[in-house]
Image (cartoon, rainbow, N blue to C red; front, side, top):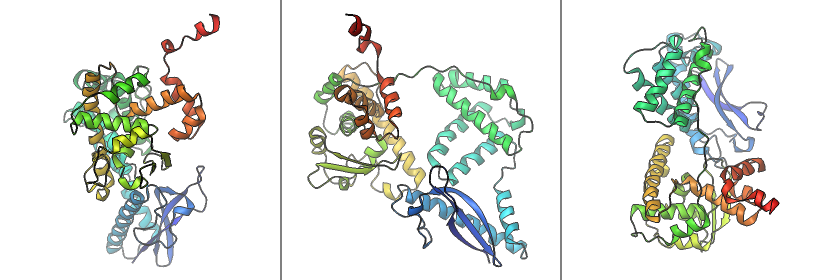
Length: 406
C-alpha cells in the first residue's frame, strides 16, 4: 500500500514561494510529484493534516486545500489501481505511469483543448480555465462538428476563425485578437507534448489588428450627477448606482471584493473597513468616507453580505461556482449601469471597473500625489500607477502648450 504526504520544495522560487510536492512512499522508497501549487513558507502547515495543509493566513488557503485534496485523492486512487494490476511495481514506476496518464494522447483539437482546460482547473487556475473555455466553445462552434487534427492547423483556419468571430459572433477586434492568441497558445502547447511534429510558422505569426483602449472614467461633475440621480429604491438601477458609487468612494474597490463584502468587514461604528483583496491577497484597510456610510445605511443586515449580490450560501460553494456567480452578478450590474448613465444623460459606457479608473483619475487630480494613489490602489510598483494615470488622461482636458506659451 502506497502512502502520500505533502512537503515543500527545498528551495524557493524567484518570487520567494515554495513549490508543494506530493511525496509517494511505497516499500520504503520515495518519489515526488510537483502539484503545481506554490506557497509562502509560513503558510504551510507542517502537521500535514488532511485537507488543512495550507494555513488560513494564506489568502487563497481554501482553494489550495481543495485543489490539493483532489490531487492526492486522484494519485492515491491511481496508485491503488496500478498496484492491483502490478503488485510488484516500484514507486518510481507508479509515478512514471501516473505522469504518463496525465499526458494528452489525442491529436484532436477539441479533445486536447478540453485536456488543457482541465489541467488549469487541477492547478487551481480556475478563473483562467473558465476564460479559455469560452474560446474553446467558439472554436467548437466554428468547426461545426468537424474533427481537426492539431498537425493540420493552417493559416486558413485562423483566417476563417477571425471572420467567424467578427461576422457571426459580432466580437470586437480586441476580443478577436485575444481569442486567436489563446488558439496559438494551445497550438504551441500541443507541440511541446509532441502532438504537433512540425510547427506551422504562418499559424504562429498570425495576428489581428487591435484598437487602442481608452480607459473610461467619470469626472467629479459626473459623479455628482450620479449621486443626485433619483432612482426607485430597491430597483436594479438603484442597486447598480449604489454599488458603483460605493466602489468609487472606497478607493476603487474591485467588484469581486464588493460582492464579497460582509458586515463583519466593518468596525462597529462602520468607520473602518478592512478586507482581503481577492485578486492580490493584499489587506486593504481604510477609513469609510461619509458618503459611503450613507449608502450602507440604506441596507439592512438580513444577509451577511452587504449588497446581497451573491447567494446566501456563497462561502460554501466550490471555487468555480463562486467565480461563475461573481461573473453573473457583475454582468447584471454592468447591464443596469447602462440604464443609469442613460437616465443621467452621461454619454459614456461605464462598468463597475470604471469606478476604479475614476477614483485613480480624480484622486490624482486632487492630490497630485501618485504615491498616495499607488497606496490606495495597492499597486506593487509606482510605475504601474503612473501608467494607469497617464492612460486615463485626455489631451483636451489640459492645454499643456497653452500653459507653457501663454
